[in-house]
Length: 121
Image (cartoon, rainbow, N blue to C red):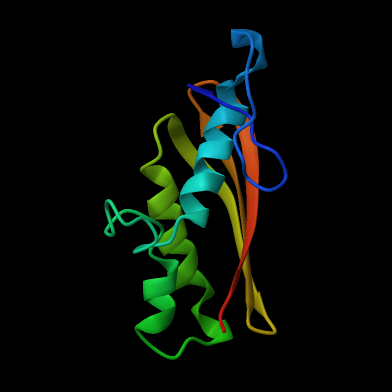
């Protein structure tokens, strides 16, 4: 898997050679970050595509005791990413209406980790 690099604002940077592309486990981790940041309904061309976390929040009053339900939702979503072979060390924390999620990934190219945050309100 090869991806183009992006700047801090998420804009795609120009690439002048193949060696400038992001590849391997880092590319799989980036792809997961991109997928987690695209929420269901965000893309006009395919509204069903995207991370279902916003729908999970909308479908009921969420409390700090639902860590495992949220962890399962995100883990299954991540598992669908091409190149992911195993997910481990899953951690969720809900504090002050902020959800933190992190995990380690075994990919077809090696190991990497991801970490992200969502707001519940």
